[in-house]
Image (cartoon, rainbow, N blue to C red; front, side, top):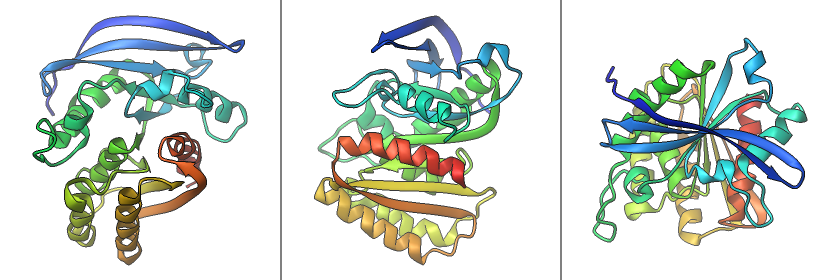
Length: 265
């Protein structure tokens, strides 16, 4: 296993909004694989410091979703706290990965219209060999790992399912951009699904908004058809379409429903 992540800076922030408070740690990791510093936000369970428990970890692409409140939509940290308080999910560590170049990091192939694209394999290498070992070393993790991505991040979640199925046990792909590079991810699934040899059970949660981008909708439904044909006993999956929601709003609904689905399996 390659090593090389080192901690640079560590800050703890408290956010006060609407008479509610949540805290997160802001950490800087140097990646030798990506040859750059990466910023992460870590949201811990309320009684983490006093507990001897070990916790599942959800990694959130487009890490601002974890800590930023949006118009009419709370941060994912608030979603997590509400779901945990209601007993709908267990206590969990959440890690938001701040973007540097999402076109480069999330897309598996390079296309001319996006000159920096095509770095998904290297980004997943960073996950497996640097970020996850860093979290396992510095936090009380249980070994259960989830990944959430929306749009291009959802594409990466699907790509990881097909190309690196040993990294995560549950993957949430909200409105995934499976039309990328003339449906490349769908074509990859057509090749990979019949030949995959899974060493662990994997759950993939797919979702779209009813008013999502038509090109995404078409590609996701073609991918769904391949999943229906698949005989992978260790790959479980669900697909939901959210009535009345567009691409942006489906990001939050996909997270809330997806994380609950992961822990119901």
